[in-house]
Length: 241
Image 1: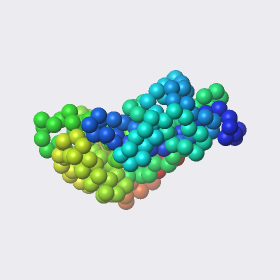
Image 2: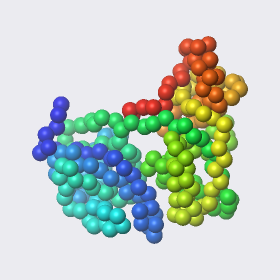
Image 3: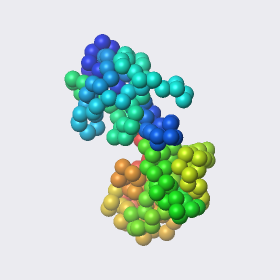
Image 4: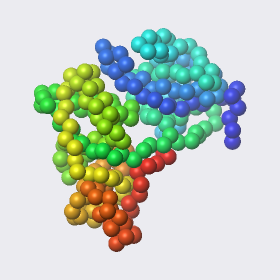
């Protein structure tokens, strides 16, 4: 059902930005108000979890300027400060549940291993990973077999450059990025992943949402495996959720 503009509050998270104020290492979730009236301090329902969500720390943000916002209406944007439980695409609402079309995520085409140049900055390095991945700067893939070096996945080279720049300047952790030979990724499942571990030219990693991703060095080898093993789960990473 359509929700009228003057109905109960509903909004969705369309952007997350970490370190907008480097002095405080803050984390801001930007929420587009789609219906109803927002008042600072109101308790909403977090759509994905169904849990109550407090909006005590709400602000309007324009560049480096930030002001406390007490109310907002449909079409306005509210910045929820230190809302670390929110992710891009999440819904917030009062009264009846609401759902919005999913924000699409795009298939990564570039992959690189990330290592901190200074092992003494290990904590800063991982703090940067934890904050920039939810903001969509890069996807972070981890080896389920125990290799602690994460693999970053991106659509374009600029994502890696932004990641390295912010990690160095905002977190004080210079990073070395080493491209991997992989060319294409597919979503898979635990059963297929177990089969793929024995296949040359294929590596299996786990995304932060616990989804196994298979990375292939050759798209032609992927096509051959798809023909020979039609029962294996090898889905395109391009999603609408």
